Image 1 (cartoon, one colour):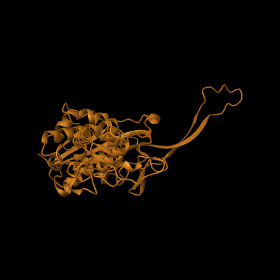
Image 2: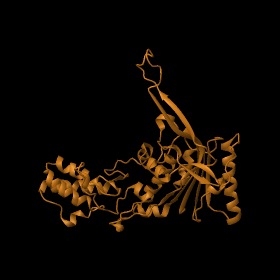
Image 3: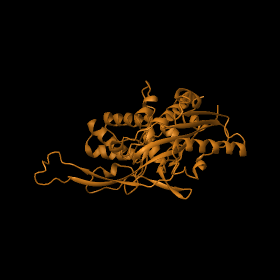
Image 4: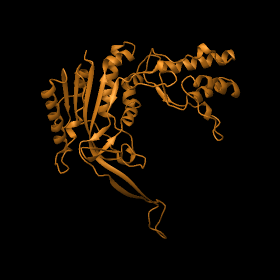
Length: 358
């Protein structure tokens, strides 16, 4: 088994606003002295792990889900569950706070939000097994009419770890013993070419305006957008993933295949209703081996020529040349590779998923 699985992915998006900055415009970054479109790794990982495709591929007939939940509201959920089980409001809030503070520091009370001090200050990623343990404890407390004992509040688990936690990790400042080191590293996706963010000036018309008095638009607006061919790089440490999953290699293989298919097919959801910018990857190089991983982003330090008539061909050509140059200088940087090229119709996803799952 190879230790590292590396994915180099080119995906072309039409005009879109996939990942917005604080001003609502597409995120950018400078590379090679010019502006590139950017999709943050945080955005990519959230869309992948919460996507219907990822969850369907990992669907299981077992009782516990393989997908975790990341939330600040675990205390609120516990409080609402205790109320449903017939516990008084005062006791429900006290017991729910005792449970929630096991995962992090609670927020301070707020005058306009009576449940604010049930929320945790940081997002906490909990597995299905851990959530089921919380529910079982809540039922016991409600049945026996008592508050949780100290030993019962040890609710975090290392066994039966959720696949998304095993892949992307978690950090608990107050319980570092239960931290999970991410087995999957994700780079920010960057356009292979320079970009200039364009402005879409748009209007909305009132359907009931008969133009008898005013023929103008009911709303005027402006939104930034741009089209881009993105290079994405993902590195999966399969040894660490198996370790995070308690030594379950078949589950690790399923996780890698599920993530790979999701990466190729799932787009960020930003402004999808306005742009319908869903896209499949156009070109993928998958690599397996024990060699020290490396990104091929250097292929685009010199951006694809803005006047190119074939961005896809030029971007693929630059990626292949950089890959060959690294091999020539450092020796083979991977033991084996599989290429899927949806521009020329070479390769297929079944063989690619089989390759990354070996």
